[in-house]
Amino acid sequence: MVVLPQSLPAIETDRLRLRCAEERDAAAISGLMNEAISRRLASWPYPYTVPMAADRIAGVRVAAAQRRSLPFVIERLSDGVVMGWISISRAPGEDSVALVTYWLGDAFQGHGYMSEAAPAAVRHAFALLDVATLRAAVQGDNDASLGIARLLGMSSLGEGRIWCPARGREEACVWFELERPAEMAKATAG
Image (cartoon, rainbow, N blue to C red; front, top):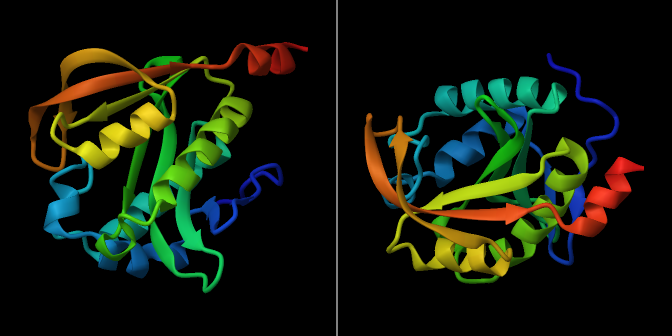
């Protein structure tokens, strides 16, 4: 079992709790993933089995303990139901850059949950991971995810490509970027 540092607390918003993914979340995460959601994600294949979810969770918990990733499940505060995932992980070979990935199960889309979760996760990523830049790769026809990138204040870097291990190929995307706010840079430098 990987022990996480005490300083990786859950994040609560008005309706949500973002907490580090745990082994007990594997069945819920597997159950939320479907073909339509997987099609929008680079590294989440379908079908997505419970053992696959458990392996991902084990790996991201190690990365979290090493301060390379913030792997959050998104829980509804009112009943503790796991609704989706948001993770922010250092880009391979670029310690100052992190990649943002986010998704919700079908039943939880269209209720403003990601609009509530993503800004909270981003604030914590800049504070806890000490990265200078966040990036996201979004499919150009994924209006909901494009809206979240814009809500976060991300600037479009234009069209590009991303390797999608879920499908074993490169795919077209629109890259977005957000620099760490100046007030956070001052806070972490002092």
